[in-house]
Image 1 (cartoon, rainbow, N blue to C red):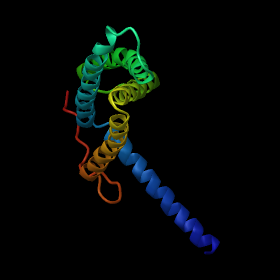
Image 2 (image 1 turned 180 degrees about the horizontal axis):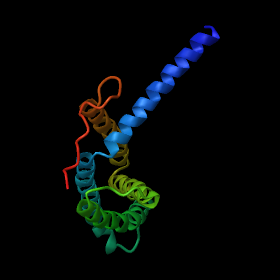
Image 3 (image 1 turned 180 degrees about the vertical axis):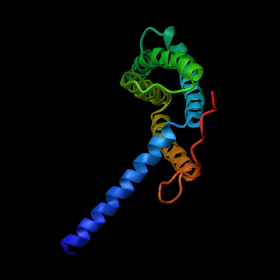
Length: 171
């Protein structure tokens, strides 16, 4: 390929990247999309928090824990308070009809969900190593299933949103 062809391909790729970035920015600023993210987050945080409380209860009265049980308890000791804080924050986001862009909140979301997953995996591992491995593997498959479904619902083959941006209601 000569330099002109390479430069032409590069300009096309940059233009396509810019278009995708604009689509993503439009989608993330859509009030209806933000409202749906808040609803889904409430479901995730509430479900993980409740699961954590149920899973940890049997370990509260036990004097000695094996490694898997200890990992489970510590993971939920991290995730449960963060999930509770995120649930309360979601109420404020719903009230304000927008999601926060705080980096601290983004980190808290990742830590809360990650440690809850570690806690659940450790709980299954405590019961049976095979169950822990299966839960871990199927958990990753489930993320792929959700991602694939979401992409097919929301975007076409060229990563363009299938739905026009909704206009916020007039004040």
